[in-house]
Length: 212
Ligand SMILES: [Zn+2]
Image (cartoon, rainbow, N blue to C red):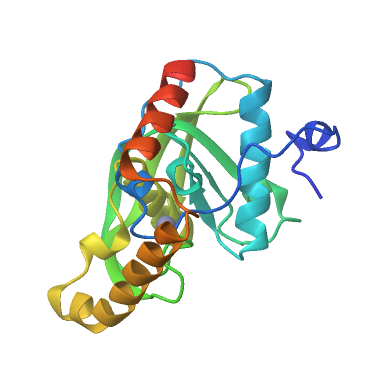
């Protein structure tokens, strides 16, 4: 069930490069991702694993720092359906060229903030430039859910979460749930399941040195 692009690589016996999706308030989510210099086979495998995780968790988008990678890259499929390959996007070093069509407020969720949903104002239409997995420049015009998901994922790459964009009243409504996630994070760290901040920063810096 691998993607078109990286399927053959998944059939090899390579170990998984990506362990899991990190959850708020993991520091990787506040990391500003750096542009990639090159596309290589290992990156293809990372992308294949990101797509797999996104579909497994019923997401429509996943940014690299959500899987503890410091690269400017996200995957997206607004249908959430792995069989709809024409709706599957891998966007490397993405940039918004223009915003059109005014603003729209709709509910969002995030795989790094499980169980939390709230309305966010976003541009209803965007033009986005990026590189694909073949290292070619691509340009897309997204609207509706695709535009929303792309802006949400681009925010991730800048260390911004959708909860940062909520109206104060909405933020107040989800505050309890955020505190629960913070508590869970502290517990997991005490149990040794999550490294300390210095270790996380050192790992991200080492990965950056390899590819950015
Ligand atoms: Zn998200």
